[in-house]
Length: 185
Image (cartoon, rainbow, N blue to C red; front, side, top):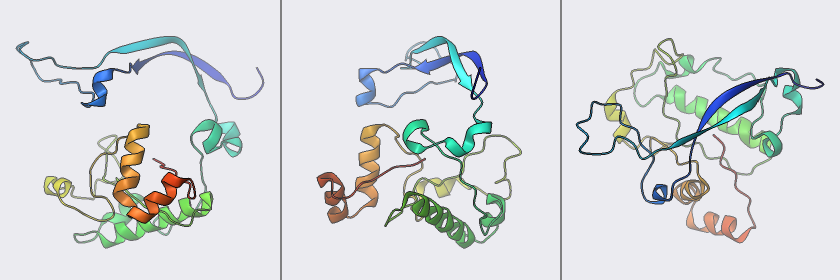
């Protein structure tokens, strides 16, 4: 086979459901007495799903065709952990976020960049943010640049994020097509 090597796997996908227009998908893993549904989700599996190793072709990736790119840039803060060891609010973290926003602006050739939904997520117990005390009260406080803990990545959620972070006149420019907006995760 030419190009990236591939493996095949069985992957489950969340099915679309009209109820998601008014409520978020959920699954409760708590014990249940059966009085209430533990999920509103249904899944389907496509087998085989082709999984491609793109490491050898990173330079050919694009947002338009692949949905992601890998950028090589030396940040002032080599790891996220080095940006968070500061008193609350974490000033060095905000510097880090501004730098990451500037890298994205430069890559996209954008006039404006807005960083939102930067809250920490730990993928494993040994994550790089172990030095940061993620006190639960932080989740309910408005801390610039984020004002909410989660983003809805649906097309409608993208418009809601734009409305939340752009001024009324800026949003009107996007709606009219004079400005182009891109929400990147």
